[in-house]
Image 1 (cartoon, rainbow, N blue to C red):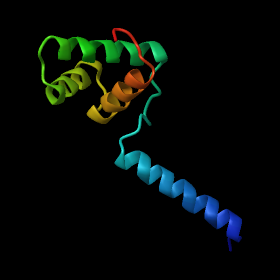
Image 2 (image 1 turned 45 degrees about the vertical axis):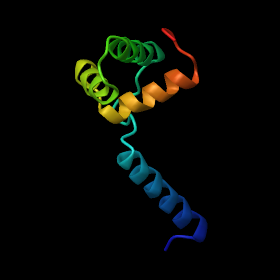
Image 3 (image 1 turned 45 degrees about the horizontal axis):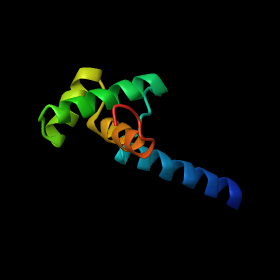
Length: 86
């Protein structure tokens, strides 16, 4: 039988895993900073060239072999950190 603390830790871990799956966190491979910045630059470039936001996310996800959720996470990280080419 699990103690209260062990049971709570297991429950927290399961919730975190479920959240990661729901939010499509980068669980298969952690992308390097350089790679994430490449994704961000490509996304900004696509949008600067008139590709609509939703379409640009799809295009970039296919180009880099990542999910659209990962593209959104990288987009947010790039905006928050003022990555080039901003």
